[in-house]
Length: 247
Image (cartoon, rainbow, N blue to C red; front, side):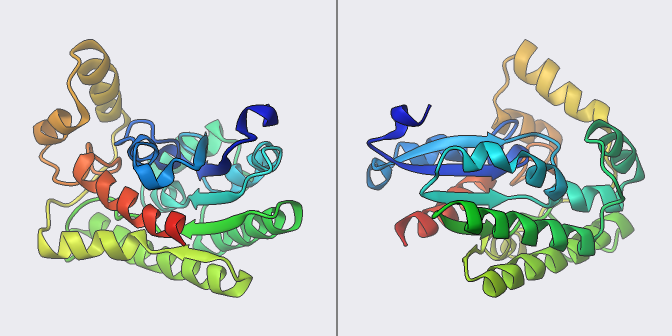
């Protein structure tokens, strides 16, 4: 496998569905088409539904690539597990999680991921903070308010681990917050799996609506469904990633 990447710098994109650019705006394709990124080969190592613990278990496949850079985007599902019991129940069983999600457990797994990458690769590592789920940064709704608190806390954890481990911090949380502070949208108040099936299997695959059309149907400005990024939200991510690639 390695031979096909010999002429390029390998960028491994690691994490959950956002890292995989599946069910979201394809920020990887956006970066691939930019002339300044022609020296890179982007390799998708994202898996939908993953938490930081899951990413740690999958890390040998990333290490086997001998990547030149690793972009890590993980933690949103850790947060959703905390806020929504139905998510914790479903992901906990599906991903065979040994304990409930918490900021402490997230940090422990994030540190382990970074240390393993540092010890087994020579890659330049970028830890990416996370876009808020929902679009109301000042919401009084209890679920959105809890999401706001946890996404801010996780951004601080990711930034601190990056500092502690002397790797790059990619400030997506901050860039996204700037946008939603200037132009907020609605709160994310409940998580229903049937809404995601409706959007991705019926509206996208059967009716062939674009993500941006689905976002408009659902009343979101930066997301398709309050969780996954549409073009507007995804371009913030791509432009923030570009800073890491240019460094």
